[in-house]
Length: 124
Image (cartoon, rainbow, N blue to C red):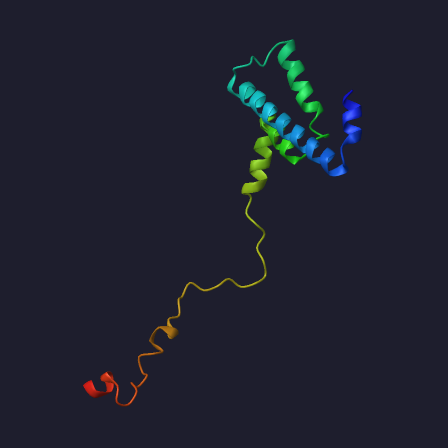
């Protein structure tokens, strides 16, 4: 019956439905991952292992958001990602900017003569 409904949808509608389903699945998986990380669900035992396996099974099939959520299950993988992100960028051959600030443009209008006959000119 569901296959009949999918056949009636256009390509765009089918894609939108897939995205909605993936988003809902990501939200649910995120809650499971938080529960596993916080220790609310016991990490030992057959049920927890089964849940973890089912989550990991879909990691390659779904998008990047889902991969990021699943990455929180594997603390070692998450630590490696953070380590890579904190490494210093490679130094370039370009010279760096000096710390000295040049204020040449600040006094451009100080030397301008007031217009003849203006208030400033008459006050001189």
